[in-house]
Length: 329
Image (tube, rainbow, N blue to C red):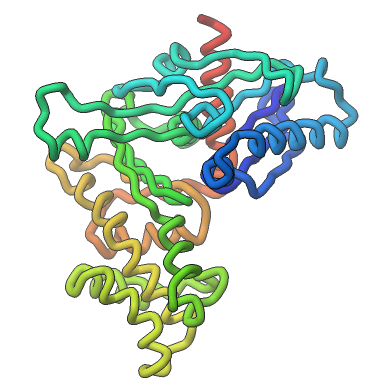
């Protein structure tokens, strides 16, 4: 049996598998943001230890029944519990295998843990400053998610994929390898603006309770025409002066706020060399559906939504693919 760990910015999930059959799962609202805020990784170690123990006790198992804990995501990053260097693009499973490390971390569990690092892109030394700034990119965990989605959907060797969540990551896969990454704040941006500005009283919680495509696309188009900041304040003005509902204002707000993330994907998809490539949209709802609507509004073609059942376990299946390849090294 195997336990997989997927730790992101705000959540940590542990899942128990027998072969590839999901047996049980446990989640905690704790991610690397918590460790960063506290200036210590202790909370991450304590949370991981607790989640593993919960799965074992609930299923009448001991540590000896578990072959390995496979960790993908931010726990192997510079703000995680076992920092290891990212694999460098172009990268796929073989590059992740070479960069992965199996360790014992007794303060967490007696089960060996395979840490799968993220993937990064670096500019050439002679690149100009703008190119360097654009190229400095990394991700932690999304690479395993891509491996799982690619296998589950039978994707070709060339595709574009966007994974909206706490952050949004847009990756180009060319010749069967991840070759570029672009990042956006996405979900964290929505949370920060909606919870820590005067707009809080104008917006529901959660911000998107109901998807209203007309208001979403209106917000996106007006941010494109008038700018992001001036349109965000309209969430309050729509209600105060226009008589619009909270949900209508919230959809306008999200459409406007996601303008730049959507443009990033649309511009990559519009490049001549991207013609005909599938543009895959993963992650969970409502962001996945919101992205599908807004990308269509931006003129992006060949859109493919990852089914919910695939998206939910993609990072786990991708991590297990890395582990199987690691064992065969």
